[in-house]
Amino acid sequence: MSADQGVRVWLRRHGAERIAHPGGNLYAHLCRVSERLAVLGCGSEVRAAGLTHAVYGTDGFDLALLDRADRAVLRDLVGADAEELVYLYGACDRRRSWRELAETGQVFDRFVRQVRTPTAAQLRSLTDLSIVNELDVIEHDPAVADRHGAYLRELFASWAPLASEQVIHDAQRVLRP
Image 1 (tube, rainbow, N blue to C red):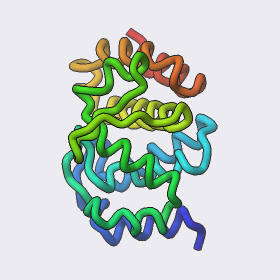
Image 2: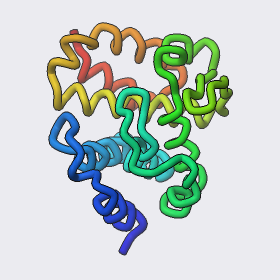
Image 3: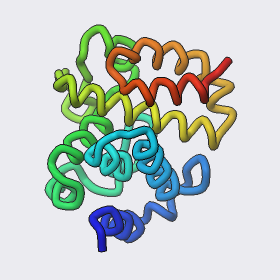
Image 4: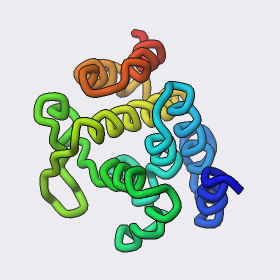
């Protein structure tokens, strides 16, 4: 069994298929995000994080499959770099971080209530993952595009210096006005 298959088995065992999410269930969403990151040329750590990005819950989806106190479990499944990205993604207070992210390079960690300054590589991975996640939600719930499309177009344009070029191009394609 490949590492990716092992992670998928773990997600199903932890109930990801039974959790509703735009486009069906959380498991299907996680798989789509990881697969899209692969198509867009993102590295293996980012793809692994895409497959598990909601494990600790997120600012937009506050349901955890694993307690943050058990981070070693996820680290053993996906590796230290991917787990750190999953933590950063889940910890990101979007309201306090997203708009200024390109200017400050800082993320407000909602779990520990303090500011973090990720490396340039971590910021690229975080923005790529965040964009691809939102694109999947939009494609599976048109109401989200209606409500937030203009905001996301503006936000992702501001993230262009941080994100991968191919991810930005995909966002422009999906979010055409």
